[in-house]
Length: 321
Ligand code: R5P
Image (cartoon, helix red, strand yellow):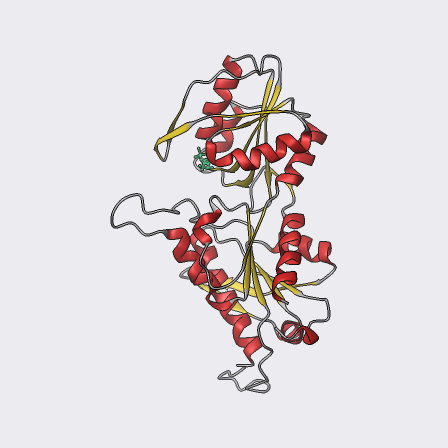
């Protein structure tokens, strides 16, 4: 990137699934938000267009595209957004209607993709012969048309090593810690499995409370088992902190273990609130509260992912621009 071209502003662009988060990011950074024109054809296929009024901004400043790659339609939309921004910045304006100039100068690199929730992140290994490492495939597709990527609370960052563009891994745990401290004031934070230890212990340290973790074995997508463990939670308010909640099975099992050991109240907090298959109802029978970010639209979104993504954008600017 020619740093002389960059004047300290960026255009924040969004499609259909992260418009509010993109607007919050734009406000946080004091940059302009440019929603793209996105719609669905009657057969459900997606359509993306850079509106005429956004073309100049997208060509004159580096661009951050905010796109959650979930559900599958979000992946296609992200790819369409990347391609449309890439064409506009490259100056390929050719169109059958013959509108405007057909070709403009190449604006050069400067496309960044911010992914609040990276769908398919959990298939990060080939567990059995013949499987696809979906997270890696998705990352390769998404980075084909960008110069850097920011990913919020990725399940297991190691899977995105070896990409051809820089990646910033950012976390909403600082904001989740502040929210928990202001609302439930936990005495104890629990990680429901070893994979969430780093995230959950960050929250415990920020709050200044005790911390422990459970050892979880996943039997299948709906069934997990926790190894029995003594936890010092008698009379305590406990927050279980994870990267995501899907069916809620992990949280419900962990909460049951905490209740058996005398926990007074149990709250669940996560970055990505998928809440699939009646998870909210299931959780309401096991925990006193559920707290998530807005990384994807969900009914328990109480923490903004924008500050974490802003940290990632700033780090990427320092590395790339
Ligand atoms: C897996 O290791 C993740 O960190 C979550 O614990 C898991 O995806 C949660 O899934 P569920 O809510 O279906 O138990």
